[in-house]
Structures are given as C-alpha cells and as structure tokens.
Image 1 (cartoon, rainbow, N blue to C red):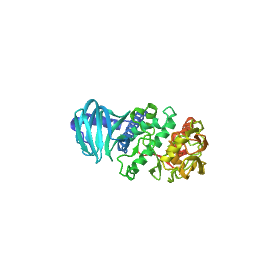
Image 2: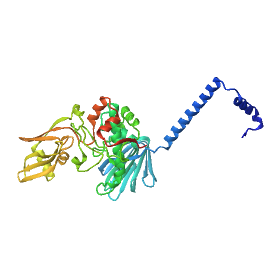
Image 3: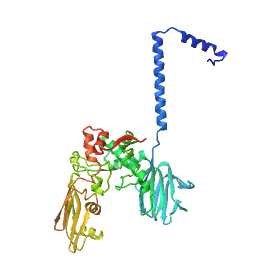
Length: 418
C-alpha cells in the first residue's frame, strides 16, 4: 500500500525504477552492503538494550568507623539530611567540617556551622557535592550515614559495589602483582561482599541488628576508601565487572588468606562451620611467600599476663604446648600448664589472644625458653579458600583468573550476576 502524496510522485517513480531495474553484480554488492549495515545496527541496538536492561550494580553498606562518641566529617560542599526523611538539616559550602556527637537513645548532635548546633533522633545522611568525604585519614566515595548505635557513632559508607571492590583491592593484595591474580582477588572480594549483603539481616552487633553489611577491617575485608584505588586495580575490577562465584545458584562465602603453606584448610576444621562448596586443595605454589616460614617470640611474663586476663591460666605459667593437631598437622588444641592447674584452649583462640599478625597461622610448634616462648610456624592466615601467594604464582605462570578461582574453589561456578 502506498502512502505517498501526489507531490512525492517523483520519489515513488524513482523507487519503482530501482525496483524494476535489472539485477547486476553492482546492484548485488550494494544490497549486500545495505544488509550488512542494517545487521550491524541491529546488533548495536541489541547490545545497548541488554545493557540498559541489565541488573543495576548493588550498593553495599560498609562500617568504616565505630566505637567513638564523636566523629569529625570533612569534605567540600557537605550537605546533611535526616536519613529516613531526607529532610535537609544544613549545608557547608567550600572546605567544610562537621562535628558529630552520639549518645544513647539514638540521639545525634552536630555542629553544621561553628555556632550552629542541630539535634536529631535517628541516622543522618552526609553527602559531598565535591565527590569525596573524609573520615580520619581515609576518604570515601558516594554517601555516609551516621548512626547513634548503642551510644557509639557508627559511620557507614553506602557505596557502589564495584567502587568498593576497587577501593579494597590494593589493601588486600599488592597492586604490583599480575593482572590475572588481581582479577581473581576482585571476584573473590565481590563474591564475599554479596554473600554478606544477603546474610547481614540475620547478624547482630552488640545484640542489635546492624545498619551495615560488612566491616572495613580484617574481620571482613580491609577497605580504606577511594584513595587506595590505583589504575591496575581499577582495571582488574572493570574486567571482572559483575562476576561472582556461585554454588547452587547462590553466591558463596569466598574466603581467602595470605599463605596456606602447601594445602588449604576447610571451614569445618578451622571454625567448626561447614560450607559444602569449600574443600581442602593442594596448593604447592606459595613457597615464595615471605610468610611461608616465620618465627615469633613473646616474653613469658607478657604471655602470662594475656592468658590471665583471658582467664586461661591457673597460677603462674609453667609451659604452653600443642596438645592436639588436625589432619593437616595444624595445631587444634593448646595446653596451658600453670602452677595451680592446666587449662586447654583452641589454637584459634591463642592466635586472637596474641594477634593474628604475630602468630600468623595455626601451623606452628612452640618452644619454652628461659624468659620467653618461641613459636616457629608455617603459612599465614586461616588457610581457607584462595591462597593469595599461590594465586600470584599461578598468575605469573600464565594461568587466567578463571583457572585460579577454579583451583581454589573447585565446587563453585564463575558467573555474571549483573
């Protein structure tokens, strides 16, 4: 059916003449070119639409400060509002700083200007028109929420998950390492964060439901903010955008550690918790780690003091030794012999007591000397999941990030979540 007006007759006649013209090689080439251009345009349109319809990047809530009655927030062009209603409380233009004080009952008082104090109940939202907000020595992207949580000021960064991973990557792993290893670390960190985001509602902090998904310390993942982002770590995040490790269509709790010492551990042996997708695997790549072998000594009187404070020592300390080991030879139970009796504790508890950066793993022996106890050990960290030094060597040997992840998480599948 023709919908051309009479004045379009010339155009219609031209179309008819082309349609009725004889088929020639030149005409065939022209029509093939038109088909190719049309097909390319359709592909571009489909790609654009698929990206537009893709799941949005999640926002993760990371606790970046805690256990303080007052907090100083700094930045440029700070805007403060009530978190629940987004009612604007004030704004400081230019270089700004806001002093926040928290008290029991969820109450917050803040000085938005030097002589202006505002008191509110419930959380407050701080945003910067300049893009970054500083708390202490660290600066953060996106938004900060401050809660008076059991009388303490809890500062929570609500940040795009990809930006969060880019900010933590160089704190958890050297940005000088090969790109494939950094990509494997990015996937593990993203997966761990998503797992925590999906389970945070069942957790408690000081007996209350926490307003955050993760902490910014070794308890979860070390996150020091945007100033830790580097070009290579940003590349690793961009090239793995949305990739996570899945088991039975759910993100796994992707544990990782520094140096396994030859064989990775299972969560069941370390914490008594079973994760069906986490198994012990032979590593054999991490002997280049400076933490593969280590020695730590502590004065007997200092060890005695710490054990006494934890109520794990009866009388004066006589000796301390490994009383039981697991299948991999790691210390499981520790016997503490005192002048008034003997107590037993887990090796994990002893690590927490002495500091995990000192007593680097549970793969150790202890030697009692005059005036001190010497621990001679092997590996660093809890030993569960990906061995970071092992991953580095695998990457140096040409393995891809997918191959590295498959080695340390053999039951998991690498998939795109968004």
